[in-house]
Image (cartoon, rainbow, N blue to C red):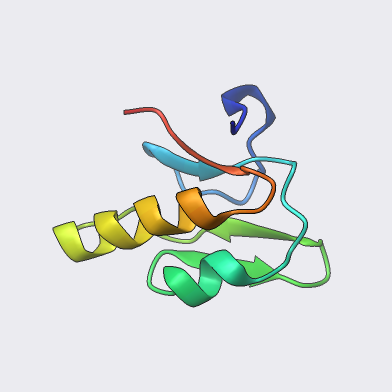
Length: 76
């Protein structure tokens, strides 16, 4: 389960986030490219934008459920 106290600094403010457990596998960016971005140099993904429509919300839920290290979380 993602830890809201360990959010990566590059996340935009809002309900969804990526925490420091991220291993930069890239799976989440493939699943939710409109909302997530990978920073190869830093070694983690982050929320570049919060979901604005149901399609993006669904993609974020899928990304969170598929994350191999459970680094994607939501406060809502």
